Amino acid sequence: MIYHDNIVALATPSGAGAIAIIRVSGVNAISIGASVFQSVRGKDLSKQKSHTLHLGHIKDEAKILDEVLVSVFKGPNSYTGENTIEISCHGSTYIQQQIIQLLLRKGCRMANPGEFTLRAFLNGKLDLSQAEAVADLINSDNEAAHQIAMQQMRGGFSNEIAQLRQELLNFASLIELELDFSEEDVEFADRTQFRQLLEKIERVLKRLIDSFAVGNVIKTGIPVAIVGEPNVGKSTLLNALLNEERAIVSEIAGTTRDAIEDELIIEGISFRFIDTAGIRETRDVVESIGIQKTFEKMAAAQVVMLLVDGSRLFDLASVAEVSTEIEKIRNQHPLKPLLVIGNKADMLDVDRQKLLTSEIQGLHLISAKNNIGIDDLKKQLISFVNTGALRNNETIVTNARHYDSLLKALEEIQKVRFGLQSGLSSDLMAIDIREALYHFGMITGQVTNDELLGNIFANFCIGK
Image 1 (cartoon, rainbow, N blue to C red):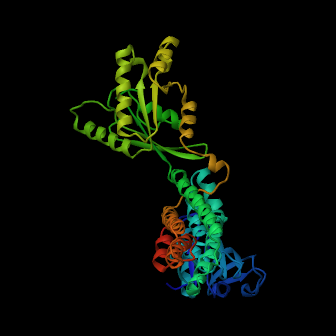
Image 2 (image 1 turned 180 degrees about the horizontal axis):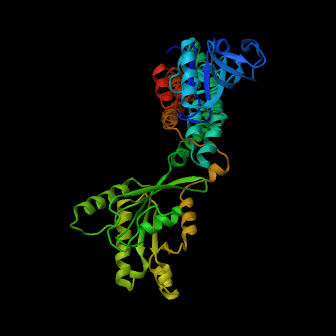
Image 3 (image 1 turned 90 degrees about the horizontal axis):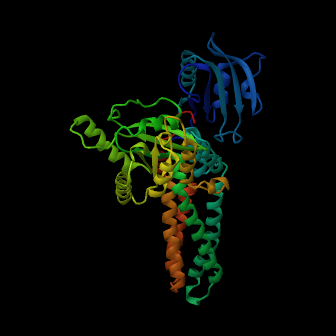
């Protein structure tokens, strides 16, 4: 990998728009910009102060390509830590390409995905977890994901890890020192304080590991499968939740033959609702495939909504059939939250409603057609997500790579604590401590390699 040449890329989305921003970074970024920029005031761009804006024209020899604004950022006080310019031009795709091609001829090369942020990491402007949070921030599509990404980009997560690593490193230095005086049988590390530190690190690691369950659903959204027999109102419920006519609704049983998915953000959390084919015995080949997909979507979902037609529940026998279906789903998916919903409540009198809610535990009565009980249903869905940590601005782990490193670090810390309790020799404990420090370093980038960086930044958009 070469990190000392000059790179260029479009920093705004590709395609035509009002304006576009072309970013250049590298040792010669400002001088390259000066060679193609003519200020309206006759200024030499290479002699201007950092963090200044300049109006002028981009020229290819005598040909004027566009009137632009050029921002100048001198290293190390720039995003990448290098000399950087950003050219704000008109958003014509022709103009964008002409300017980029001109800069390539002047000594730039096209940037790789995430290379600007990679250089920021290599130049110490961000640690690795903060750099990864940049991508999360760009991809955040709800309030909760945005909040977590901003916290991590500001260093909340990495500061917590760095503090634990430093405290462990201090004790590791004393343990290593004991090895130099092994023949004299001396202890430089206070074992009581060391035990307390290990217990503290273990508590913090467990809290961070547990937070991944919440962080992952916030980042990726919560899939919710809407299941039930044909014609109970599943598509109507999906439309009511989304407040739009997303699914076809008809009186004909078996209308929905394939899964229909759409997303809804409730109180900052993304839910992906999946309207599935009605479950019933059928000889229709296409409908059978749809029903098979229903079971697959149910298995993949994190929350299952079982919808029943309340108007069809006339007696205890029909109620018993519903209870049997509820028990079957709970036995198949014991760890999934199950919402049992009685639709068409507008067709039930008060006595019938009381009977159903008393006989079917946890039943939510709604009318999808008349939008009755939908808001309460949304509140129930939110209750499945532990948003307490989010509200209290606690550190939440959303990155699978961080989660894996935390698990490995916890395993090594537990080995050290067991060794301390068992009176294990310092040289053996030192091995496990080094491994724990290694996994801490993998999170923040204090320990890294080209392959890891390549995997991480390959997922970035070009121009960031």
